[in-house]
Image (cartoon, rainbow, N blue to C red; front, side, top):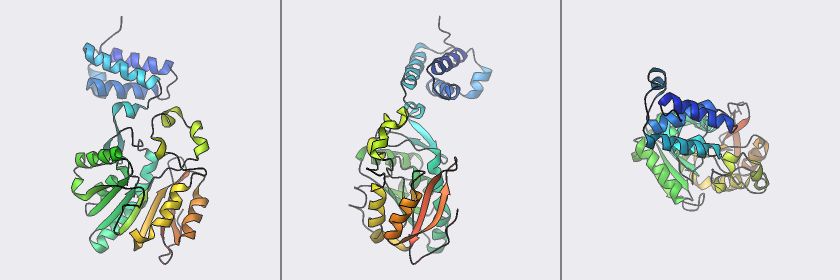
Length: 295
């Protein structure tokens, strides 16, 4: 007979996930049980014998079954933590990952400096998805504003909802646009985590990514560089003269992406690695504003 106490469900979920070969089975089990039972880690220690009703047990077991089939745990939970924000996910948005926080950290000094010098900083987030990058910057810099652009209406709705939940709506707007096609005006900073995976490599992605992240947010074309060509070619009319462009890249794309922006009239000012030591973020400025590249 199934032990339907809090402790019993934690053990059962952990056992089921481990048997299915789920990496991080103990953590995922805890996240799922806590979420669907409304419990905390302290509850598991102080009240492991707390009984759970049938509806909660059913919800936990359904969630465990979804995880066993490969669905990422944060997709099941419906939200993900990012740079101090809790962001709701939807099928048309990428799940924001810790490596993308590198892009936020890369742009924060520039955004703060711009606000200090000009009283504001206008940010354009291309392919905004959940709004993660733009909203994290706005959270850190109260006088900054951002426009989140995406081709997906569902993604824009998700981003707008996340802005509202974080009390950032007054400084965050959304626009449906295929990259720059509907964008007007100039911005101090342009940021993007664009699709950068080569089309032929999509089939080799982890199941959790290939089946549950939106394909058009992953597919960067034959060489993975299609989006960078568009951004490099189209940014100039929308970037202030002393502005910055920051993009996330695949770990083998630094030279190719740098070359595309160099041809378009930009100079690399900063290159940052992610938590694993891989090339992850490049920051560019117009050629006339040259700064020494930083490692």
